[in-house]
Length: 158
Image (tube, rainbow, N blue to C red; front, side, top):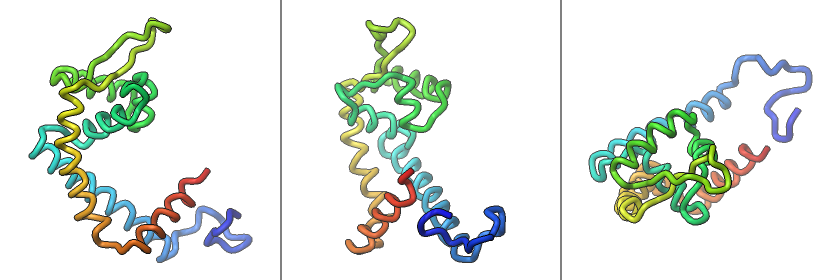
């Protein structure tokens, strides 16, 4: 049994979820779905990019030299390699990213953020942050935000 488990000794892991477990799980799933839908709608309406495209742009922005191997980028943004390839192709057509061959490995390619990509990201970040605040962080006080942060660290650790 893991630390903090809600299971009693001898209980099977496949038993029905408790009311508390269901409430916590459904709440997380609802927030995730609502926030992503609202982010996608706002980013598309105001900046012409999807939430997935924003995720690629912000991930590249935060990467060393603002570029990543396509395989690493796919992993970080949780897309299949083929899904990322299609998205990067769209972003290339808009000149927001560019693919670069890897001089050390001809089989590998990098995606790199372009100047227009940085500009679009800067514009979109205001909208992104406003939606996150309206849907989530503004509804909690600082102590609750810290508690949620600790909870995510605990849940995601390991």
